[in-house]
Length: 268
Ligand SMILES: Nc1ncnc2c1ncn2[C@@H]1O[C@H](COP(=O)(O)OP(=O)(O)O)[C@@H](O)[C@H]1O
Ligand SMILES: [Mg+2]
Image (cartoon, rainbow, N blue to C red; front, top):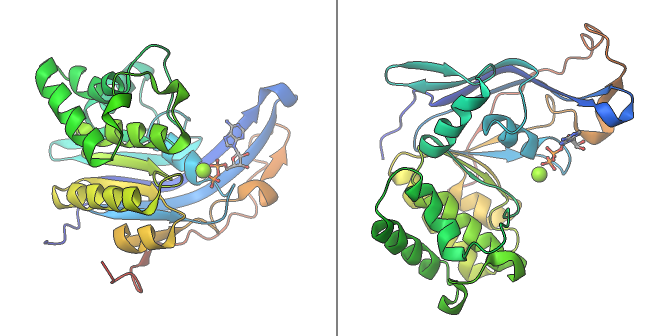
């Protein structure tokens, strides 16, 4: 595959501070000065210990968490879209057409069957029901979800079954940008392999992916580069707690670490 160097997603001097309204308006800064660049067909893996801010970054890119400072930009052929100040109503279209997100846990809606959960991203784009249904079934079968579960709501499914429904839903619409938050955490090795293949196929069609994978083998198979989060992600231990005081966080800015090139991941 030819390397494409134009980024599809970039972040510059990205900051995240949570305002803890329930705790007297204290501020918790968990990210300072994050830089990243992600090209089409590339999988950038966020690395760092639990609580460092990996999921927070994915939620910022998905518009679930607001950006506190810096820029987060999508680069289209006909121009750029700055996500940090995007109005709320624009996110719906962006999530439908551009950004796919496999969250850590499936958001279960009562009485909606597994098949319908997976079909929904295609239906929202105006696909015919039979086409959406057929693609959903293909994915559920590839992910070895027993057919007897397809008509049931996933609320009572096991963690691994719910995760596979979530993965099928995330991959079905072939978004150009895919965010993956520990998609293989509750899967057995056979289904981990299926997910690795889905990721490799997505790469081959030019999907840009930002992912979190704890499983070393999966990581080795899918990562083009690692983005070490220590350095600009302060995490729970070092997170700066302060009363809201503009400018009070200007010291101790960690040096932004550039993503390291792939080195020992040449096995797959
Ligand atoms: N909604 C929130 N409000 C306040 N703090 C949060 C929120 N979400 C995450 N955090 C804090 O941000 C830090 C990073 O969390 P997270 O991104 O989930 O870490 P990771 O995914 O690397 O394990 C943690 O200290 C966490 O408590
Ligand atoms: Mg996380």
